[in-house]
Image (cartoon, rainbow, N blue to C red; front, side, top):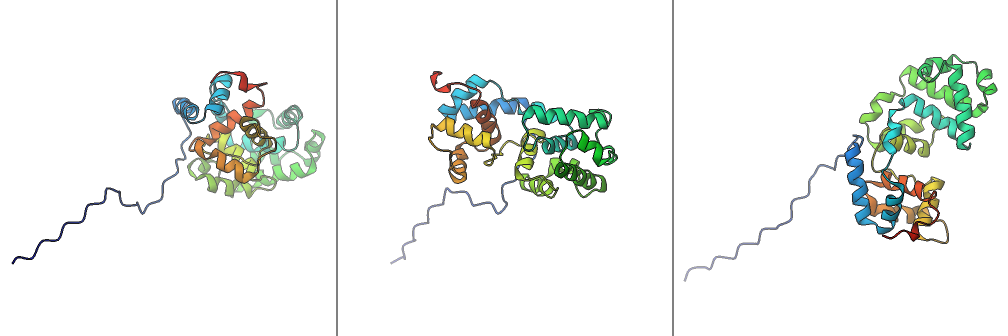
Length: 241
């Protein structure tokens, strides 16, 4: 009697897991991609969709025209100051180097610290500006190569500068490099915006913020921009979804 042939095992329909990790895109979003991200966020989150409709197109890309060095100088100037006060002092500093086109590591290092202090820059910020300028001038911080680096590598490079923390690096990633998936949980505007969007009585903790933002991947930068905008809207709940 012939031996029965055992049944063949069913082929698995699952694709084998790739041994290569997902590659993070370092390319900035185009205007068309910003619009696509906006549509995706509106479909995924009805509450955020209300804010998006009120605020209009995301304008993150408008800050990309600023030079990388100038963007980091302004990040230092903006620390612990209101927007108006920071801009006034920033304009005084630009005047010391001959205007925006004259701003460079070399020109900033050539300004006597006493002149920067007279312009309203605090002594700690003067040391931050000089450390930034020295690092760019001697090549320890190569700003042009940041375009090609991962988000975490950019954060590591920028936070090596005295006075520039993770928040400053995240702002650089969002506004200068237009990276699409940054969510600055330490930003007070983002905390308040998320609290208002979700109708929370208390400010959310970092872990809660990260969990709630998961559905916005890979466009958390765009969602964050709209969380800033929600603070400018009196009552987004009145708008029909």
